[in-house]
Length: 500
Image 1 (tube, rainbow, N blue to C red):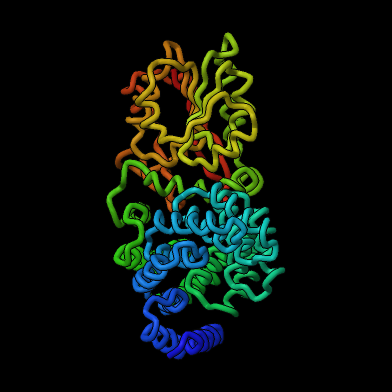
Image 2: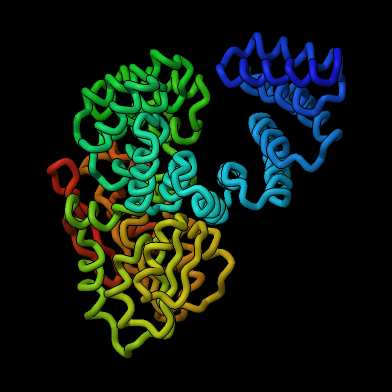
């Protein structure tokens, strides 16, 4: 076969490939290689077909063989990166994309793929920069707009994420992934009806289990529990081993008052591989497992990372939350010389206590487990220091350096208060104060003095709180009973406590 014959056969293979006729294209590439075993394009594109067929390991072998022949081919480096990423070899994938970009800095798809890898490596800001480089080169690249929407959502910039998803849809109206990204952003903004509409449009194009699950989450947040349950069951019909959908289904059954069905669903979710600590925590709230001493740290972090964008609005406007103001009123009569040298806001969240605490302190420090909540707190400009850490571990590393510690709506994620009280006592200077809120355990609910409620929050008996405080070396200065917030239209009763 002459060189021209090989070229003609390769051209036929490429045309078949472009038409999606993969079997015929694959056979044609192989005929080329029988005659010309070192033909770069045939090796490279045969590797691309292997990836399209879900065989990334073989794709890597073929594309690497091609690159040994012609190492200056940017597109081959980019396709190698995609196959490596399919295999989870993300560091190697990133190196391949960067090799492609050294050869062709104007290669928009490589910038987009590089962003995807950076996102998987937990580097969202670098991923965002990469997507924006892609869009600077190719402003109509729908994939880059869609992926940019996903990372903006990850960064808590939900309005920007929605706008980016809309840009993707302007470039490609029938783009299921962009519709899902739009749905996620709208859901985070509490636009539940609009998010469900976006998910419906995505499901019409690609009925994926993840999309049914996300639609169910939006319906549950909107109060449509029956609709949410239906969607989780649709997700499980598509993917029967979908642990997250079973977990969410269990949560919804529990909210519907179907206790036995919820217990069975939690146990099935556990068997499927759902987060064991979270499942056992939920079962404990239903009396089906031992009561833990605290809520799982990953559960609390995830809860507030997701909640950060709408935390203040939902807590204050929907739940009628007013604990920071109540604690301020409790504290004021007991504060003499102001400002205090150092005040700690434990579990500071987005900084709802900061406007009350800032006038009291020369140095105001906030600590929280959720970086996204801290990012919102930083925007206030009221804290001198913000630290992302587990409160207990952070306190254990400090000496006596504080005049006042405040914990608003924090003890609801702890059952056993003894470790926290001991550590707060350790960081307070002589005469230092500790002010906090806790939810009230129902009368007659005995046992250890605390219990998980159906809300997945701990409530405490006031006599347990007083005994534990005394054992840690505190004196009770003041206590008040108060309505801390509302939940599903009902008052949530609790206590405000000031210790010295």
